[in-house]
Length: 194
Image (cartoon, rainbow, N blue to C red):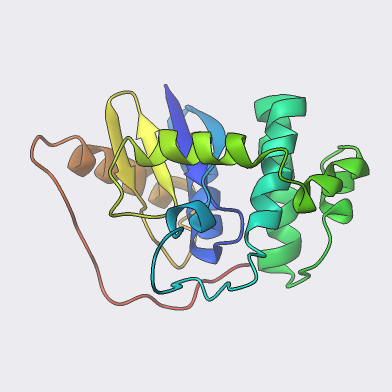
C-alpha cells in the first residue's frame, strides 16, 4: 500500500501529521510518497490573506521543495522534509535552506530555487493534483490511498506506535465510507513540534 501526502512545508500542523504518517507507516507497513502543496497557490485571488503572508515568503520553501522533487526524486524529498521540518518546526530555526539541504544530503545550490520562478508551474501542478482529489474547500495536508483521499487529519501531537496505527485505521475507515464529507474535533491546540 502507498499513502501519498501533499504538504506545505511551512505549516506546523502538517508537519505533525507527516510525522504521524511515518509512525503509522512503520506499524502498518505502507510506503509514503511526498508531494508539494502550496498554501500560496490556494490563496491566490482571495480578498483576505489567511496565512498573513503579504510579501509571498511562503513561496520560498515550496519552490525549493519542488526543485528537490524534480532533481532528486521522492526519497530525497522525504529526507529534505524531515530535515527542514526538524530545523524549522521543532527547533525554531527559520531562515535559509542550506542547512536542511546539507542534512538531507542534497546540494546547497538548490536553495537558489527559493527566489526563482522556475518551479512555480511544478508547484501549481502538484497543488492542483492534491487538491483535485478532495476539492478546493481544504488546505494542507491532503492524503490519498488508492481511491480514498482526505484532508488532514489535523492533529496537534504525534501519536506513536500502535496509537498511530489505530488513528490510521480509523481515518481510512471513515474517509473510505461512501458519502463521508467531514469530521471535526475540538478547537485546534498549539502543535507539539518536538
